[in-house]
Image 1 (tube, rainbow, N blue to C red):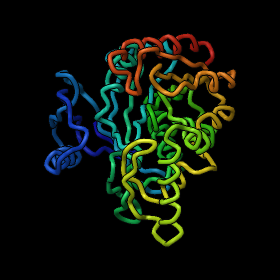
Image 2: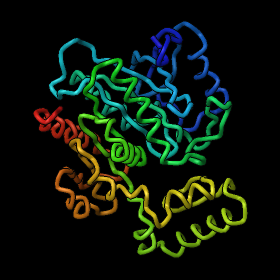
Image 3: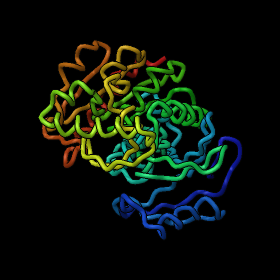
Length: 332
């Protein structure tokens, strides 16, 4: 059953699992949108030749933005040994709820362990998207989002998931999704997840960027964004290369990567009460010593892993499972 917070939209969608392209064509996007309009099962291509039965969900945030996601329940009624009723999985920059093969593998393990899984869109899904809001259509996506608004997205999904499965919620984010999970919980303690797993959160640190080998290029981009904002063009789109190649507004770049370092996850950790696991790839920036300064946070380094854990996802999932199991006795 596809549900909003208040009422059903339509029946379940049967999803066969051959991989969707990360960027959908207009025809593919239209086909996906039909799932929300027709009260019958539809096939969408997805991951690795398997078939999944999911409930497509829609929620509205407290500031009026509609978001979509996919919910999977475990096969049997047996309680999860993890002590967590359901997990909410949050995508990274420009991602969405259906395209992450990393999350597909993690979700499969969590379901096998008896926990429900909700894979969600934030308002930053895809590069550029048009959101349905209380005020009409609005341009969002990674290019237009303000990261602070992720609090509203995470709160809406946690509320919906608790209504479906129970109070004990695990929050999992990858890349920018990890930063959003940490930021939301640090700024809104009432979200109170049972556990939080941050998979390779990037350190959004102005000071670190300025001290890096790419400092000149970063500062050139940042100053260009500042000039555009000062001259009355905050919504001007910039095609940037640092800290990653994508399109973003000038105002968004200044807000996200500026000297205030609002989204430097290292600054967020002391304000989080629940157990936190941070996983990092050995091929990424070495942050283990910096994270270790926060004694309540567990860090797992996977030596051969890149940012997407290519070829080592089994080890990543094993370590997440082990940590969740070790925290079984600490749930509230």
